[in-house]
Each structure stands twice: as structure tokens, then as C-alpha cells.
Amino acid sequence: MIVLFSDFGTRDPYVGQVKARIHEFAPAQLVVDLLHEAPDYNAHAGAHLIAAFAPGFPPGTVFMCVVDPGVGTERHGVVVAAGGHWFVGPDNGLLSIAAARNADARVWRINWQPESTSATFHGRDIFAVIAALIARGEFPDDKLETVSRLDVEFDAGDLPRVIYIDHYGNAWTGQRAAGLPQATRIVAAGAEFRHAATFGAVGKGEGFWFGNSVGLLELAINRGNAAERLGLKLGDVVQIYKPN
Image (cartoon, rainbow, N blue to C red; front, side):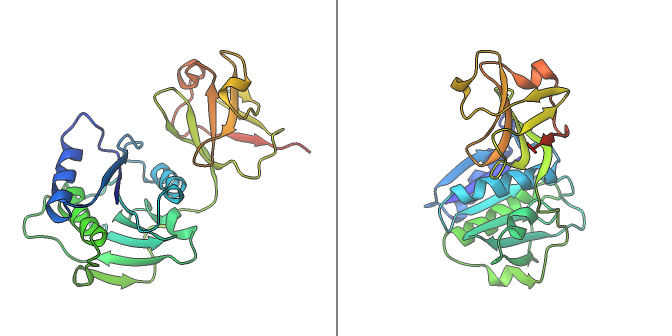
């Protein structure tokens, strides 16, 4: 299985071009579109999302991840093996949290590119090919070199900021919810959120926080758009007040 994660969006041709290249090299592989609306250019937010999503996929899954504002510069491409999964993408921090949270992480630098390579579309021309080869069981040793660590590494701890807003207006944060007492109060964009386990546990129009399906703290309004109503936006700080 190859899982695609990017900031390409779905209205442009980029996802289709990547999938066509994958099909060329690994036609038998299932390709899953996980997210193509990752925050634009924001490798830090993307890194926290990838680390949260990955444990929900079966061992051996290959994640092709592209949030790559430095494409075509001297930044490297990398392959990471961590937690039973493979990750292929730019070495700009995007894969670093998934790597850091798994003690078994190994890293390879991609030292190959085809003769015809777009300076601005390594996702199609390089990462898609490497991901396809790994997924079909042909590890491309001749295209990689082992390195001791990634060039760019983000702090692997929790990030108490808004990192993604879904189409409902719910605000995902980089804070893992496990271990937060239910009595914890959350403050963001000047609004206070108290815990509820489900949307149906609060009244219509009422805000709350909960641990979402991938374990992140999420802020929401039952049957309402929290981002629009409260002005929540990417990067907003989330203040966490645990009970004494």
C-alpha cells in the first residue's frame, strides 16, 4: 500500500500526475489518498499530522509525503523506515517527528534522479518512483545512501498550536490528548473549551475539546464551524490548563 500525503490540493493536476507515475512502476499497488489539503508550505504542521496518522496503517505501508517549498534547492530527499512503515519525501523536517518517535528509525538519502527531472516536481519524478519501488519489494539500494540522521529535525514533543482545520471548521492541534485529564481547560482564540467525549455530549452550538480519532486534541463546536465563529486559524497557540 502506498499512502499519499501532500499540500497539492485536489483541484490541480499534481495528484493525478503522481498517481500515474506510481502506476507506471507499481501497477499492482493500492494507492490511498490520505490528505492533499495539508497546510500549504508548512512542513512543521505536516510532520505532526504524519506522525499521528501513521500508526493507523498496517505494517509495511509506504507513505509518500510532499510538503516541499524548498523543492529544487540543495535540500535532500530521504527515505525513513520507522515504526514498521516507510516514509519518502523531502528532508525539511516533514518526516522527522515520525522518525524521532520510533526508536527503530533508519534514514537513507536519495542520491538519484532520472535524466528528465522537473526542478519543481520531485514528488512525481523522484519520490513517486522511490515509493513505488519500495512498495513492490525492490528496495532501491543503488539510488540511496545510508545516513546517520536527517538534516532537519523538529522537536518531537507535543505542539500546542492549531495545525489543521477540517472542512467542518474543527481545529486539530499538535497536542496529543492521551494523558490530559477530562477536567483540563483549553483556551484558544480567546475562547474556553471544556472536555466532552463526543459531539452528541454537548448542546448544539456548544464548543468543546476532545481526543480525535488519531489521538490529537481537537477543538470543535457541535454542528457549528469553530474556525469561522471563533476566528481560529493555523498556528494559533492553544493554552492548556490542567486541574490542580
